[in-house]
Length: 226
Image (cartoon, rainbow, N blue to C red; front, side, top):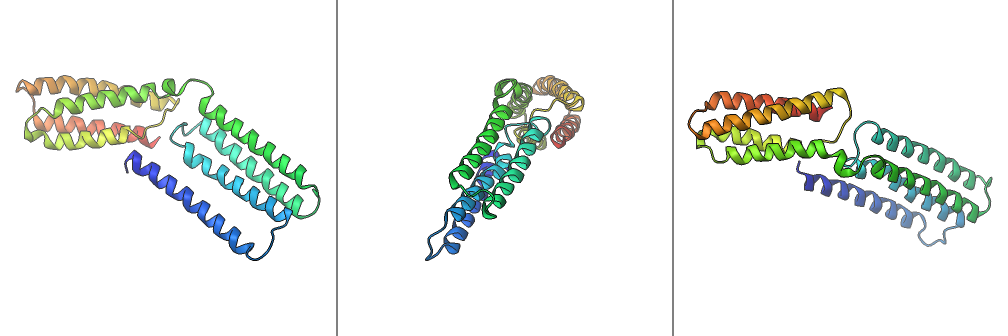
């Protein structure tokens, strides 16, 4: 799945959820004037839905550990506290609609602050993705070199195309294993760049080149699976 297809799918799922919530609201309040408690409940449900969708929307921008774990923790806490608040309002414990609405707004603001910290806190986005961008640029440069080789390298071109697609979806990680794999991928890309230069001069071996590219693909998929 390409990046644009992934974004389109996520947006489609989000719109579908909004449509379902809107439909249920209109069906449940048809021909009746919703009470203040009902309005508050539906406002809370809408905000909870936005919060639940946040990991889906922000997954491409934060790592799978650390910051993303913090985001998931924030989602869980917000949902729990919001549900408790809705129960208190519906049970009459919190009778003032204004107080309940302010409390819900405060919870949502705190969650948005957490999202800001997760996304903008620490190193800049460019710094977080610097190592990934390096892999992508090296792979793209190798792909351009291979495109100048004879037709017998078509299998190599196909594998490199898939490698470039896999690299597009890598997220920055801080684990020792991810750093080791990225360093190996860089070494392999540099080596194959030199091999490609030799192949242009007629000194390459198609089978050996294809074997090395498959080894590179295995490394990239190991890194992607982390």
